[in-house]
Amino acid sequence: MGRKQENELCKKIIELLEEEYKVFEKVLNLSNEKTKYIVENNLSGLIELSNQEKKEAETISKLERERQEILDALSKEKILLLPI
Image (cartoon, rainbow, N blue to C red; front, side, top):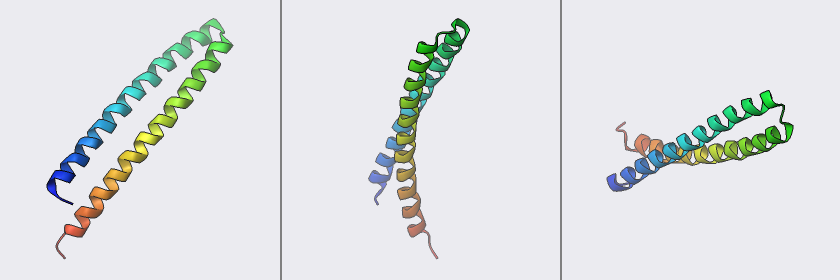
């Protein structure tokens, strides 16, 4: 793996982390909305928000898997390059 490819993978990790951050912000906003719905005793709103949270959690899991795969590839490459 060349330096250019390593840089591209590092950029991809940064992009994935930025995406994760945005999704976590959405989850935080959903949580705040859920609090409002709990106070209002709005069960249908709570169910809807819970479904949205589930979708966001799945997105976070997907992004995390992608990030981990890149990190694994980078670490394997670095281990192979270490002098013995």
